Amino acid sequence: MKVVAFNGSARKNGNTAMMINYMFEELTKEGIETEMVQLCGEHPHGCIACYQCFKKKDGRCIVDVDCINSCVEKMVAADGIVLASPTYFADVSTEMKALIDRCGMVSRANGDMYKRKVGAAIVTQRRG
Image (tube, rainbow, N blue to C red; front, side, top):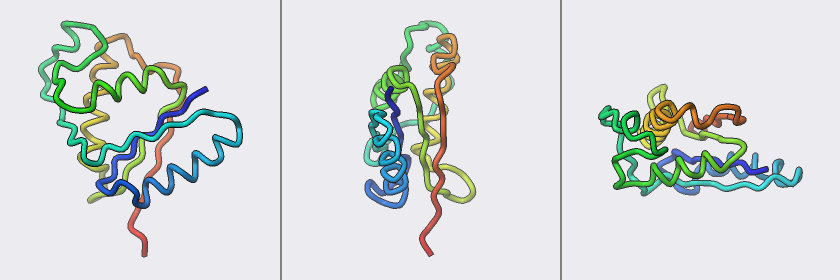
């Protein structure tokens, strides 16, 4: 079994990464393989609503200039998917929003590719 977590924080080793690692410690104790994908520095672009993923149905986004297609592949290969993001103005980070929109659109266009996978979210706030 494998769980992949996507860190949507602008800080590579900030609070969100610490919370993912805390969760990973518990999963590792149970023999579950884990992988963290850092979106920081990857600059994923938002969905351009071209609907080419519906036309091509190849499990990929036609916009192939960033990490999104690699993220789609990791989601398909995993048994569990974790989306982790700090709270920015009552929303997820722009990196996480791009991941959700584009990976979600590709999934929908290809028969709901992530159906029956376990999902979870981690939301962090500023230390105070």
